[in-house]
Length: 171
Image 1 (cartoon, rainbow, N blue to C red):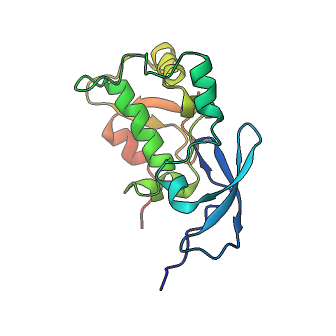
Image 2: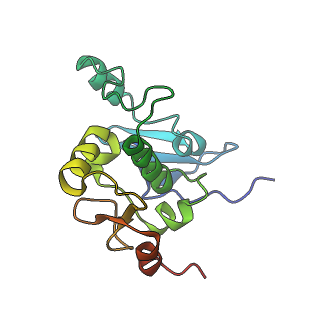
Image 3: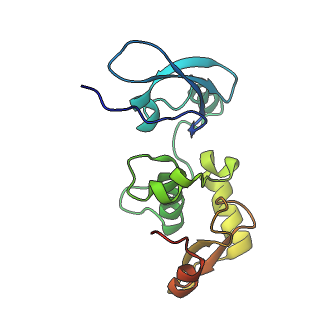
C-alpha cells in the first residue's frame, strides 16, 4: 500500500516548476512541470526530488554551446572544496532537498534562494565578496529577516548568539 504523496505543486526543482499533479496510475506520483524555457513535461516525483531531472534538456544544450560542460570556478575540486562553495551548496540543500534534515525549517517554510544564485555559484560568490567580505572567525551566515529568502540585502555574518535571537521558535 503506497503512502500519501508529498504535494510538490508550486515548488521549484532546478529549472522545473511543478504546476499540478497528473492523474496517471503508476506506482509514484507524476507531476506536470514547466521548465524555465517554457517546455512542459510530466516528471515523476523522485526524479524531481533527488535532482535526477534538472530541466527538459535545455540546460545541457546551453552549457554545451557555451563550452561550459566542466566546472571552471575552481571551488569544487576533490579534496579542495572551498568554504564559500560549501556554504552555497548547504543553502541549496536546505532550501530544495526534501531529504535534508533541515528542509522543514527552510524550503518547507517557503525559504528560497535568489534565482540567479540557484544556478550560478560565481554570482553568489561575487555578491558575498563584494558585500559581506570574508567570514569572520566565530561567525556564520544569517538571514537578517528570518522569514526572508537567501537574497541580496538579507544576509549578514552573525555570531551564534545573534542567530539565536533571530531564530524562529521550533516548538
